[in-house]
Image 1 (spheres, rainbow, N blue to C red):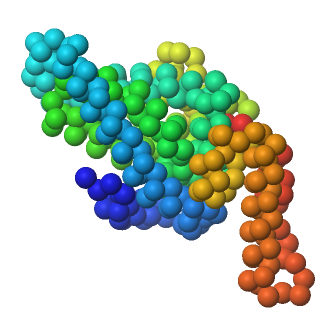
Image 2 (image 1 turned 135 degrees about the vertical axis):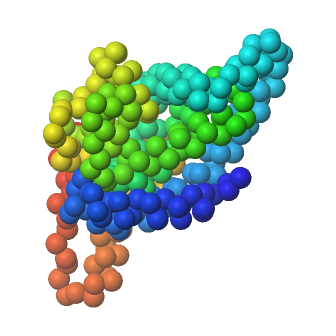
Image 3 (image 1 turned 90 degrees about the vertical axis):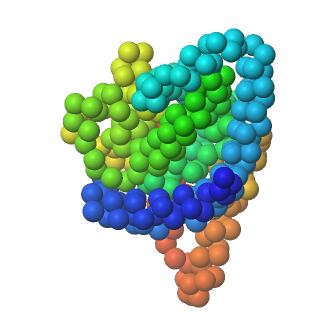
Length: 297
């Protein structure tokens, strides 16, 4: 197992960097967009922490399932055709994901963990990595633990995990790919970008990770045909640096706001000093007012 995800990073670059140039949803967005470096740190360090947490949980669940789940049931599940096992895992896993994801939006103290992921203001494939480890371990556990407990075969689980992993990059990527009639069945960038939109009509919508049909059935679907979100982000004072993002859910709101402001001011001073100018450079409009200018996605 590549604990830090270096191989996956190289493969993702080869796939998504060209795609985001050729069929970009937002052509004006740069490859090295704002906070790209911080999200790269998230990809490597969070990748290790999330995998470690999930391995510990999965080992415990598999051990418990050996005692609680009848051996005949596990054997029957593992004996099905691989394609049927994968289809079943997609349904079971996404029901778990939907429930956990919706809870992280609805429960205030859980939202503080999930807000880190929604703080991204320019969406691309690497945005999938900006998460808090506790958020991702919990959400992925809701998807994966029932699958391991039921006893699906190792080959089918490997196929499902491959689909799960790469689709996460795809739905965050800055690509304009239409799924046609399958847009209601398979999660696409069009579907998930609306989940990150700061449009008031898109708030708390599109919770599914793979099956938009769940949102359609549960009344949380928002995917207007022929339109794409213009702006992304939230109004929570989420810091822009990895270490501060790890601490953010455990801080009081006032402390987090002060930390975010101080980090922005330090970054501004560093940019000014690097410029070597006699007069301060103009600050980007979103640097000082971005939390007032955008709404919760």
